[in-house]
Structures are given as C-alpha cells and as structure tokens.
Image 1 (cartoon, rainbow, N blue to C red):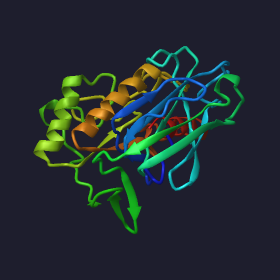
Image 2: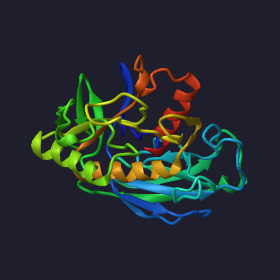
Image 3: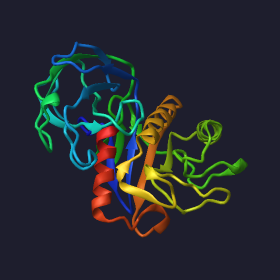
Length: 285
C-alpha cells in the first residue's frame, strides 16, 4: 500500500528504510461493486481480486492499481500487489490492495489501468466508511520532527546493539528465528528498554551478530542463493503477522531494506533488484 498522506515514512539515509505501523485489517472479497464495510481510522482495508491473466513476472508487471478518493475529495493512486493464491502459495491469480484511511467519512475507490490491462481487474469500484478507532496513526514529518497523525510528537527510543540471552539482534523476520525468540525480542524492547521502535533487517545474507547469522531472505531461495525476481509469498505472509505482533506490542517497525556499502545486507544489489523489492514493499505495507 502506497501511503495515504504520509501514512508511513520512507527515508533514504545510508540505508533504504521504512518506519511503519500496522493496524487491524478488514477484508473485502472480490466482486464488481464490493460491499461498503466500516474501517477504523488508521486501520487497514484489504481489497482482494482475481485476475484473468498472468504476466510473465507479476513482481515486475503490476496488474492492479486503485484510484482512491477521500472524504475531502482528494484523489491519489495506490499500487496493488500480487499474492499468488492469497494464502501464501506462490501460484495463483490473486491480487490485493491495502488502504489505510486517515479521515473519517465515506471513501471511494475504483480500479484503473496498471502496468498491463486485465479484464478480470477492470471496472471494479466500491466505497467504505471510516470510523473513529482510537488509533493514533503512523508517523508524519512536521518540520524537523516526527509526529503521530492523531497524537503527540514522536521521539524514537530504541536499543540498537542489544542481544542478551542469545536473542537475534536484527533478524526479527528471519527464517531461522523462532516465534518464541520474536516474542522475547518484543518483550525486551518494550519492557526492559521502554523502547517505542525496533530496527531490523528485511534482507540480509551474512551480516552477523554475536550469536546468530541473522539470515533474512524475502525472495525465493535462501541466504546462500535466491532469485531476486521472485518474492517468497509464504514468507511475506508471515512478515504480515510478525509486524502486526509488533504493532500490538506498541512498537513501530524501523525496517532496514538494504544498506549501501554493506555486502551482507545486500548493499550491492543491482538497481533493478532494488526497485523491484522497494515497489513490492511499498505496495504490500
């Protein structure tokens, strides 16, 4: 999901990174004119569609794009994303779009032309009602500071090099990290350090901490060899859940996608591979 009114902060420093929060999710299934659900402010509405065609690589050729109109009549575009069979399977014709409303009232959306035409995705439209939720929203820039959309100024507090008890340092999303370790990481950051954000890798193949290899592979394959043209949708389905856990713990996710000059963190990726990953991240989150 490309952010509505800066629903997430995208920062390019030495690394490509995201600071993002996840909310509860409502799902509207595929139909020509979908029902009008209620969605909490700063929560997520997931629209689900079935395409009639399959591009050679759906991670390069996007078939779904949504035009969204907010209650103040402001319009903007949101990329959809390919999601295989919709349940973490790699093969299928399911496309999704995620919308995160920042204003109460009636929102409207419609599908529009994307990278290539698809008859199964053409002509869809709908509306939904955004209601108050008590969620303070994500970060927006206000001058030289960060501020929650419906809250106070936000001053990031974290503990960067913290790996006691042999917990992974940066591989919260890692394929070798257990759920128990993930829960322990969140508990320590929240309760021991009183942190409000946590930094971790989205891709890493060899940059290691004291006790772990810190492997995180968002593509098909593993840390030793992966196909950078194909996202591993079973892992991305897990990433969704891991990030929701972080949201429920009161932490913002500070995601290091790749770091320039850092071989282990895919800092040497070709620009085409970077662009592919960044576009998928922005559409899916």
